[in-house]
Amino acid sequence: MNSSPTRLVLLVATRKGAWLFHGDTRRDTWTIDGPHFLGHTLSHLRLDPRDGRTLLAAAKTGHLGPTVFRSTDLGKTWKEARQPPAFDQASNGLPARAVDHTFWLTPGHASERDTWYAGTSPQGLFRSEDGGVSWAPLPAINDDPAFREWMGTVQDGTPDGPKLHSIIVDPRDPAHLLFGMSGGGVHESRDAGRSWTRLIDGMQVVEGFDATTPTFHDPHCVRLCPSNPDRLYQQNHCGIYRLDRPGTTWQRIGRNMPADVGDIGFPMVVHPHDADTAWVFPMDGTDVWPRTSPAGRPAAYMTRDGGGSWARLDQGLPTQQAWWTVKRQAMTADALPTPALYLGTTSGELWIGHDGGSRWSRIAGHLPEIYAVEIAELA
Amino acid sequence: MKVLVPGALRSYTDAAQVEAAGATLLALFADLDRRYPGLRFRVVDERQQLRPNMRIFVNGLGVRDLEHALRPDDFVAIVLALSGG
Image (cartoon, one colour):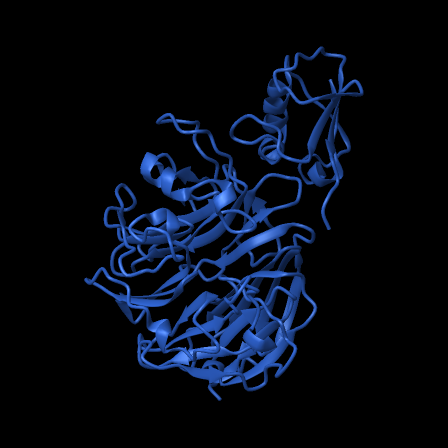
């Protein structure tokens, strides 16, 4: 067991509020702080790694419009953004849109202390340069006719609305950005979001559709390896992929998963220090797409060789009749030398997978539907 | 004029009933937002449309048009059409 003085906090965003779980140094005991925003729908809760104490929360309720809350005292008090993410007035002859909810929050580059990015439903990209107090839309995405075509309509998206997600800032270059859209593909910018190129070669689409059209691509979660920022992993609606830059063609590494499990799922987790190691949490993608743990037996799968092979990790998890769904933001790893995994289910269970997922134990069992789980180090 | 505020918005106003002014509902919400920053966007989206499940009653009559003209002695109620679980 790894022992570390690092103070970890587990940030859990749910359909009915948010919870913070403060861990001990062995990651064995977790102290609950919450609920925060009881009754509000929290899509994402992030800690700013640049100061180790500022929290941003993406919130709405069933009735009130979407907003972002900010805390500089670890959730003791919250202050609403002065200007939450909102689309500009209609332009380029395109229909006006309204943000339904902010779905994804990503802190900006370490050198850009107060910069944050937000992805919304319907798909939109926003940036804040004042720590999340005010947000400005990025017109090269939100008001571009080609992007709007690729985004499709609300009817085309995921069940609770199409989403812009997986916003990635290259740790080597604040101007190098990536994101995914469900649907609408993976896109990359080298100039801080002023212009974008698609990154969809090699990604498969549902049979009968044109794989050269971003509209038909549904990346569920894209992650960049901190230890090798030229390597990306992706869990897609149609399989698990890896991309090594400067290459531009995704390789379907999910073909090496056991055939009876498949390579469908939502989250993608990368190792903080080893770019050959990554985890997924497969969902049943057969027939009518139950998107529950295959055969009712939940398990993480880990690769240690960049997707060449996968090992099942289920020690401590339920062995039968556990029909879990784990959403794309609801699984993560900490950054300690021997990382632990963390996941939350739509049935409100919160679990830790010690030693890279080799020993699982339950942290909480009766939370609301979990949307997002993040682990962060406090200052 | 008097404005009745639903419970979900009282974190902004700290009161169930407040005073605000405006020649139309849009102007009224602009004034409410000046007095209680952030309130307007929770009720009216960036297309100047009432959000789903939001209802406005002026002197007891339901109004959806935010250009609806108001008089200083009108009574405006913001109501949440409860739904969900």
